[in-house]
Structure formats: C-alpha cells, structure tokens
Image (cartoon, rainbow, N blue to C red; front, side):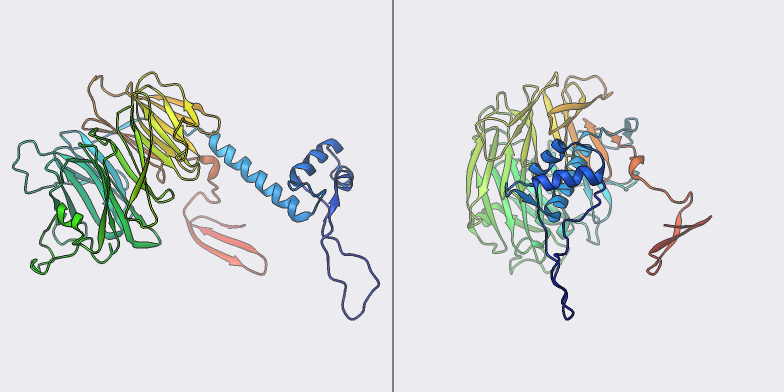
Length: 478
C-alpha cells in the first residue's frame, strides 16, 4: 500500500527569521485517520481503516503517529513473510544411495564447518571422509587399545569444532579424542577410561562468544547422563600430569575417577541418574535453556531436562512422561518447543517449562516415529517412521504438508539414522550400513540472475547510485 501523506507535519506559527520553528510530530485521531485515508488512498472503506487504526493503537491512546503506523506495517509484512516460509513445501531430487564402504550400521553423520567435509562412522569403527560434493575421499579404521576384543563397537561420534578434534565412544567404556590437525592421521590425543557404563550417545556444544567454554554430554546404558564442562578448551581439554611424556603426539590417558575428584581444574563434571537403568537414547545440551536434555524409550521420565543452577556445577531436574516412550527428540530455541518421536506413532510438541501435557500433537504416521528434526529457518518439522515414511509438518497449523515414502530394502530389523543438513539442504537417512541422500532442489524463485555467464566484476557509482556488473559476455547497470 502506498500512503501519500505524512503525519509528521510542521506546526504553523508566527515566522521567525532567526530560527525556524522545529518540526513536531502530529498525531491523528481515529476520525481524522479514516477520513484522510479514504480521501488520499482512493479505495477501502472507513470501517476498514478504522479497524487498521485500532490494530495500530495497541495502547488505546486514541491517536497514532507515523512511527506507530510504519512499525505496525513492517511487523505485519514480517509476519506475512514468516507465514509464507512456513507454508513453502520443499522440492526434492530423486533419492540417491551413496557408495559407502561401511560393513556395519552407520552410527553418526556430521559436517565439519572448518573444512567443509562430512564424516560418517560405523559400528565396526570405520571412519569415512566425504568432500562437500559428497565424493568419498578416504576411510580410516578408528583404533583403540581394546580393539583385540571380539565385540568392540563404536557407539557415537561428535565434532569438537572449536578445538579441531573429534570424540568417539566405544563399548569398552571409553571415549577417545582424536586431533584433526595432528601430523599423524587421526592421532588419539586423549583417552578417557574408567566409565561405569557404556556411553551410547554424545553431544558437544561450545560458546561461539568464548570458545574456551564448552560441554561434552553423554548418556550410557545404565541410565546415567554425564557431562564434562570445559573452561579452558582452547588451551587444553585436560591437564597433563607432570609425569606425562613430553611428546605432543603421545596419547594421554585420563581416568573418570580423576575427573570426579576434581584433579583437573580446567573442567568439572555434571551428572544425574534420573533415567533409573533405562538406556539413554539421546542427549544434548542447549545453551538457551542452559539445560541438558535426554531421553529413553521408557514411558516414565521419557524426557529429562537437567537445568544448570547458578553455580553451574549442580543440576535440578524436570521430566515428561510419554505413553510408550520415545525414540528421539529435537528442540527449536526460537519456537521454544521440544518435538518428540513417539513409539505410539505420534509426534508431540512440548513447552520445556510445562511438563503436564504437550502443547500440540501431530497425527499422521501409521508406525512408530523413530526420528524428528526441525527445519529451523522455515519453522517446520521433519519426522520419519518405522514404515520408512518421511513427513514434513507446518508447526503453526500443526498439519502435515508433505509425505514421502522412501524406497528402502524390505526388512523388519533395521537401524535408521536421520540427519538434516539445513545449510546445504541435504537430508541423510541411513538404513543399517547404507546411506541415502535426499537433496533439496534450488529455490528458483529466490535466485536472481542478471547474466548468463559468471559475473567477473562489480563496481558501484556513488554519484549515479548505480551498480555496474560485468560478465564474460556482457555488462549491465542495476
């Protein structure tokens, strides 16, 4: 809408040759506003402009000015843009199976922002490195002192981006930290041993404003959730004892009991046992809540939020009870919602501060939901079920806006891994040792092309306020 008048009009007064009268903000009443709008705009009724006035005059002062009107219009346009994004249904390329070399279940897919590489790791300990173009580059066996054990498995993998390391959890009740910048390929720098239970899920967070502050959280098969809060990560994750070898490439062994006793001043331990013997299936630390979120397949204490107290060294817990338990969860900080993948075929939406009941239930799956992940920018939600059906949900209206039946091999017993790389528009779904890619098509409506060939130079003329763009074949003015 184009508005052809200003509410910031000068006040007429007796002329003063020395100093002109300052401009003052003029306010308009409801009657004046509806009258002028119908006269100047030329369409619309006084009743409609009266409704607009009432919406702008939130404080019910009986008048509005130009700042109030423009602020309201900008907010409405922003809301319309958000609604438009929420209803956009992504278009996908054909499902593609990547040529993997994993022989056992794929346990994790991660993207390294620092090097623009993807890493996948499988149960038998094979680490694969993929380029940003998803071409397999190298594979490495991740080793451990316990590799001679017949049934040693890798259970999880996380990236410690702020310190250029990865951490790998094993069924030998240890977590190994590998240096990505080491002269040797994936040299083990630290080995954390002596855990009481096998860690089967991990998560890592670091403060983007202070990379020394970071948290490695993990859950085990005994129902215990534990976290290591690092306070000097850029200097060292753990303190090297005086008796340790000076060789920077040598592996340093840390015993869990040492961390619990407080021997390492550069970190401290947080832990709770609220899951009471159930396997912890997922764990994550969220900075906006300042809480560790964890889940199990139990119908009691299905999701536990362990909130850090002011001292940052103690936790207090709240929990959700979800019928039949859940397989997974995800949290959207801007919407302040936790989505849970229910064994009872339902996706529930929870306010983390309201544990009595969900704020929304998404119906549509015909089998247990095994994965959920938010499409953060569009405020949508992916869910994937046991019958290999992918759904995309509009969170605002709590409706399914897309359904895709994935063509995976027929099998009753399979392990599925679900990972959405939102930046690149890539959805990875693993089926045991196979890895499928569902890539989003580029949104042509958001792309503006001024040239057929690559742009080679851009110049701005500040006098004419024009931009000159040059390519291999032509020039253009914008």
